[in-house]
Length: 394
Image (cartoon, rainbow, N blue to C red):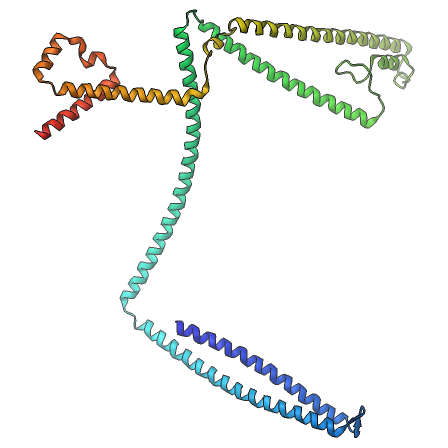
């Protein structure tokens, strides 16, 4: 196969050189034809002030050079043709040998090819399975991260509740659970109320902004100088608009009585609206004053003693101690289990008579009565393993 590729490349190179030789031959033929045309045209003994003998000498010299080049090119073309024929013969021989080798292959090679195909198919299946498993692994890693974050949140919650419970058990003053529940409900209602107020404020702001933009676009109504929130036109301007003879009252269907009634009704409504807005501004100012006084009272009370029960329970709590407390609790648990195992091993090496006497004399020292159930199971398993080891050694 390598020989065949090298022969093919040599054939390509020969074809390229042959094409270049053909181009050179065509160029020389064109030069000869142009020379013949010049000889036919130039009949006079002088051409453009040059001697014809000198011109013929130079042209004859060029023709001789071109003839020599042409001979060399013909020789190269013949050489290339011979190479091409030899390369084609070699290719035919190689093809014949290759076909003969394929026909002479035994049936075992066919079996090997089938095995290769099966291995390739199996490799493709394994690659697809690996891709599927990689996607599953990524999904599991994402789920693990979510579980880790959830675990951290629950750990912080448990740490906070443990602190609150410890404070609740150690405190002298009693903490009412109903007050904690009421505080939680109050805080939830306060949050909902704040969210609703925020939405209302945003809606009113968007509405007034759109209205102001519309009035600015029209340019008919000037903004009033009143500082009352929500007023676009002053009461004085509305009053003048109602009392004046504008286009509103010039309808042919309006009578004098209806116009008078409408004017009086509009003026009464305007006065009532002005009173309501004034009362609303006073109420808002009073609410602000009351809120400031309530916040001052809460700050004073919080300095003396906590107002809410949750503040009492969370006194001295820091969330940065979660991991530290967890590690200390794990270490203490491991130390306790190690001490219990040492005690069990020491008891195991004591004679059974002493054990029976101690059990009859001091039944309160039995492990069943002193240990919790989880530790009791661990101790029993350890005792069984130690007894099995002793029997095997004996």
